[in-house]
Image (cartoon, rainbow, N blue to C red; front, side, top):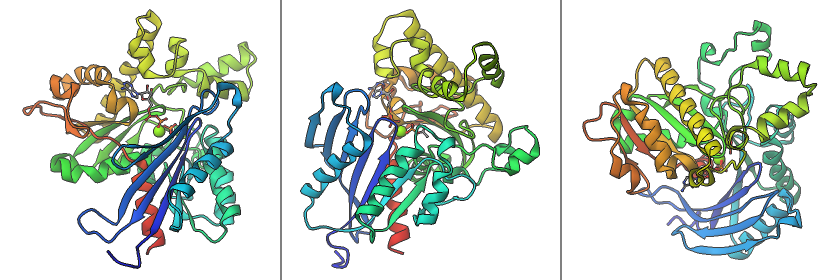
Length: 404
Ligand SMILES: Nc1ncnc2c1ncn2[C@@H]1O[C@H](COP(=O)(O)OP(=O)(O)O)[C@@H](O)[C@H]1O
Ligand SMILES: CC(=O)OP(=O)(O)O
Ligand SMILES: [Mg+2]
């Protein structure tokens, strides 16, 4: 090991609307395994409902766990305090190289990760209205780290950056051109996830690395991305992370005429529409039961089935649309919570892709290594499950920027 690197760490923070994840990577000079090694993943989930803390070592063994009562009202700040305290105790005396932060919106200015300065932070603040569910939580930990550790470099890694190479034609809404120039355009999100998937393709399938792939990031937030030769050509999310596929609590694409109708006829204002679109729609709104796919799959109610039917239907349409954008399809990749774990959803989506030459391998779809091909050997179109790793992607960006 290079003694220069000994004991040096990079921390990565992924703050969402209801969770904060803090991962620790140690630095090594190891050409085989790469310079970054995951040491610990810690997270507090269920903020606003039933907060639960869990920390795991790289081998999956538990390093710590804790629950808070539902009514304790643990805030994002409180959760971050707990995570920092835990990590400081686990890794005494380490040297931090810097912290990488997931920032959902980078607007038109940020096409790649940047070292955060007070000026950068101020520009990112102006994007809060474009990602109200995410951006404030993303910027909170950066501000706190600045205050507590002013000398430590902070790197912002954007969900939008990977998509910034898309053509203007793919980015444009057919609104007056002046609005396009003012930045009202499609950005696309989950870019760190798609970038990670693109980085795995050369080792897994040279055909897909060089071909046309639709990646389905199906988590709490859900989107699809058209990858051509590993680059993002188009995506289902737009100006904000509410467009495209139905999600846990977000609507996905809605005819904008519906919003005008609700304003006129139901007297709803912008804040009420925001709550409707971001928090009361999607799987939760349709089912009336839960935003959590596990609960819907376990339920035998008609409404749960209906929510799942709509979810699968919109995914199938999006795959067709993105295949059209690329002029064909060589493969589909499933990733994120639902994509990685929901066998039944994958099976149903793949059965809607028969016309694209996709033939699913039933038993491998049901069970196998986490990263696997789930189409039959003779399938014209490949299908894969690839667990995503936004944290590793952020750690790589942070290392690259800070270590030169
Ligand atoms: N075994 C499983 N079967 C079905 N759905 C699952 C399973 N595990 C997780 N999920 C679903 O994944 C979603 C959360 O995805 P995840 O990527 O963890 O979200 P986040 O965007 O919060 O990171 C939830 O809808 C959850 O129900
Ligand atoms: C952009 C987005 O939707 O992120 P998440 O899936 O973490 O909610
Ligand atoms: Mg996510």
